[in-house]
Image 1: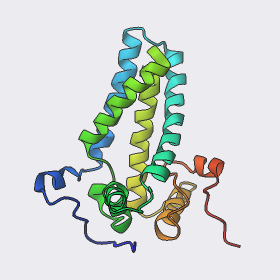
Image 2: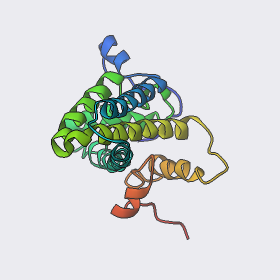
Image 3: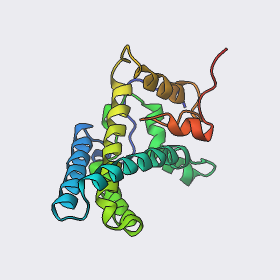
Length: 202
């Protein structure tokens, strides 16, 4: 699929559904930072966690998110398109972004969908971590907000002249050279670990 730097894909004929697929990046980032802060505040205020536990499980949640980000990008957003249904699903989830990578209104899932995901994560991770879920999910949502910020920045702005430039290069390789490598957006950590780092040119 050849990237188009102008324009926007139409995903649905229904104008309401179509409008719901677009969002300003500041909205989901703000939502997740507010919820993450609220979870930490609630957990501390009602003594579900103490300060040390909040910090520790916050960073654990952030670390967990980096793996979820990688796995979702690699195995869900780039699912096999061997059937028309799979091809349509992949295009709605991610293919339209590869075709129109400069479409700033589709660099994040719609807030409604994202909040549903966040709610599901809370209940799932509560079963695993119990009362420490307030720290874990806060860290995950903070990680998600950082992912959204980085993803927006690498598509909307020129690379900075510092070490962060590598994030721009990493994601550009995924978009413009090889979509089967460089799945990490906010961090290349899991690309290193799981063998999907782009090969260096000699």
